[in-house]
Length: 442
Image (cartoon, rainbow, N blue to C red; front, side, top):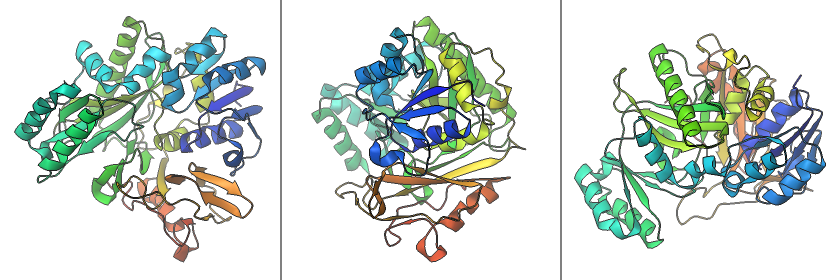
């Protein structure tokens, strides 16, 4: 039973759906949401729609005070950047999400780049920031390293979609990206491409220098199998990684990275009570290759939230409440598990045709078909979907997530057995969903 009696969840995606569902199952008495009238009723009973948009931070603060909310959990980055946590804390309300200064790491990636350097952490090699007037220099670095050897990253708020990788023959394509960013008056990060395994490390911070790493997860950002296509922000994820996928030495390295980050935030005077998501990648495939920091996000990832909540033993809401109060001393030993004997959770995204593809419009209004007899170890998290008189239809790019748990990755991957019209399973329209088939294999 969660210690929280009155909870407000800010946000409208699959991540927030998963948090709301977790809160209901944890026994939270009253759960309020900003998901909106159409989305709230999709499969979760007992949620109270506030009618407040997630960007209306002033009204969120007023509502939370009037309703004596115990805890506010902020899912997306936009309201954090606007300062919703500052407003809520000023009113004496516990909020899981950093203040406006903490949110700057997602507002402008240059802040992350500078913080990493200042506190003795590692950026990818050849990392340089270029102002709009320095596009010739940016192109020179791209040419020197080769397009296949770089990533370009738009430094502004991109919702996980601002990083672009290139193939060997994509020099002109890379130049076009440099020009496009400069012409918008924005800065650009150019970073050397890393070749080792990637880890999604979610650190729960209490604002006092304490950091607790949740189970390590791996997300799959690219739209198509094999990591091909545009970075969409998340087409699937699984957790926890086993010690074969992340050695004990690697885990200790990641834990130390979290503590360095937490200490640096305190030194900077940043009130960061929430999740700091560090995208980490080894420089080379060798097992002892050091980790570099690809990015910071200032909230739980989506769809990593869907799988991570499964690993927190039903205590996720309590853990977030403790961190929001600055109480990182509570027993959180479950959060950083060896993972080899833990259930595995895997989630896959069903996206609309046209999602995240240049020159193509996202198809909306597709009927969403979900069978009623899904197994108990499966759950659905709706994102870009809405309720109509004729049933559920798609209303955005990432429409829903299907999540399954199992004793191992092979068991969790059986989620695919419940996808597609031929299987009598989950599908969009006439089997029109865009979906990766390799989640958990790479």
